[in-house]
Length: 264
Image (cartoon, rainbow, N blue to C red; front, side, top):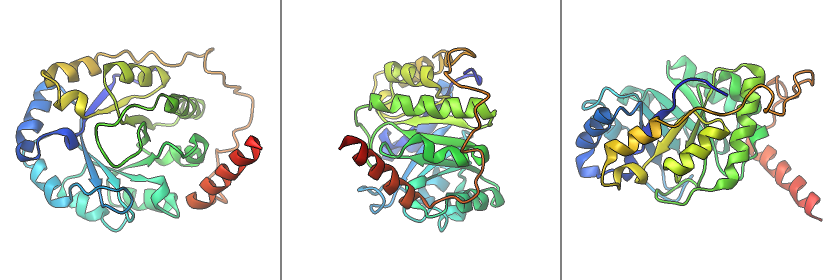
């Protein structure tokens, strides 16, 4: 799959919060494409980070799009506040809402680019019905909640499955990955089909943050070729319709039950 240049979205979660303006300027100099803002509420994930006030302050000091990742239990309730603060794109979690299609539609009405994220335990197939309406699908490659975790390589097949589905249906949805991303793991993700790399520690805790961004941006799009995708274009796509969708909590429980059955 080749959908253009790799985009890099440095995560300010790993920056010095007393010097966010300086960090933003540095990322602009490095050629970063977006700035990733991790919003955590201490409920959906076991950590608390920033709110709209910080996003608003950061927006004053950067022209980079703010890639706001809402790891919160009510991503619709606070959407307007983050949009008014300067968020360019809002990414909510599939697992946090009952009806993802409603959140996506509301985000679009509010004029913001809709994104959706999935935790490591959520199967790729559960997001297929929503990809056609998303600007970004964010695949977590660590358990969300804290920075500095190790990359989970068993998430690569999930990235590839989503990439294949997007290609098969010609959807205009970017695959973003977040968690333990550096040049080595970023290359693996790009080869699996990712187009947007979120990196925190690998950039801000390095001796040369600018060089780290440039290294990530230099990764080849490689990806899937026409014959190597393993897709059967003649086979009907069971996820092409959004009708009769089951709420995420029920779908995840069903998937886990099937996994348990297969193990017995």
